[in-house]
Amino acid sequence: MSKFVDILNKDNFSKQDLISMLDAEGTDKKLLYKKSREITDKFVGNKVYLRGLIEYSNVCIKDCLYCGIRKSNTNQQRYTISDKEVISCAQYALDNNYGSIVIQAGERTDAIFIAKITSLLNEIGKISNGKLGITISLGEQTLDVYKEWFNAGAHRYLLRIETSNRELFQKIHPINQLHSFDTRIEALHNIRKAGFQLGTGVMIGLPHQTIENLADDLLFLKAMDVDMVGMGPYIEHQNTPLFEAINLLSTKKERLELAFNMIATLRILMKDINIAAATALQAIDGFGRERAIKIGANILMPNITPGNFRNKYKLYEDKPCTDENPIDCNTCIDLRMSMIGSKVGYNEWGDSIHFKQNKKNIIEKTVLKI
Ligand code: 5AD
Ligand code: FES
Image (cartoon, rainbow, N blue to C red; front, top):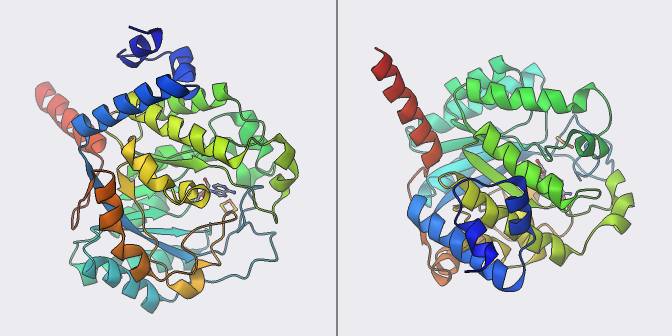
């Protein structure tokens, strides 16, 4: 047996083990993907769950140095979808048996925005009779706001840490109160406290990022005991300050391959969580999301934002699906999934098994104490 197989078969992984997995190439890489597929089948099955993605608004108060919708990018026209259009997106997801939606937007913390989201969540709950699962990805908010949105019907929250390395986090964000590593960590704890299934993730292939940083990211996800992860390759955007660091980047293809190794390694490390096949994978390779699902991802987020807004939510360049309408995207999902031996879990929420298991353990422990 090769040494690499010994690593894959461990129950606990050291940072060095994770680095070996992230570095895997050739035969080792095949073994890594075989193992991550086996674990996916055993712990979460071969079903892929859909979350129809609504990119609600590209208005943002923040200025992350990598992001195309940052406040200071004056080249970007801004939009916010009308209530009526949001509801018709939710209706589209219902009609097409999607099971869940994700509402994502640039960050805003004003009272009008907070109340608007609450009322949209209530409205979506009404039209779907509580049938649609709702994930939200609306940035850093206070615990009270998280609670308000949870009570209005959202039950999963995505907030990427972007990188778990404080120094690197500071290199890719402006240094000010609005972009604080500690606030981000606190927000993640508050999301969980409010009752949400917690999702986070990182960008892969950032300038200055090392393989050790990525291994630490995996250990961070494990230590935070997250329920869901979305992570993908960093893709440079010309109208952002981080574009200047383009000479420090590996090729897009290399970033993509590293992202696949991250996904496979994460699946081996955190066997029963939900892992999304991020859109950024598809920006580099037309079948990037399918490749991710084959090796461990189990969540697909087809973009159901109305076509006229879609090319305005440009976090990075070459973002796919910007000029197609949702129907074009939807008709090929079944085919794409069957090509890789997966099935679509229509009309199912597909909640994180990890979350359900943790909840069950807590209840059992409490009962034992009583
Ligand atoms: N490349 C890849 N991902 C990006 N994101 C933002 N900008 C980029 C980029 N240039 C990701 C961030 C953010 C999510 C909504 O999109 O991880 O959390
Ligand atoms: Fe909007 Fe980072 S630029 S949250």
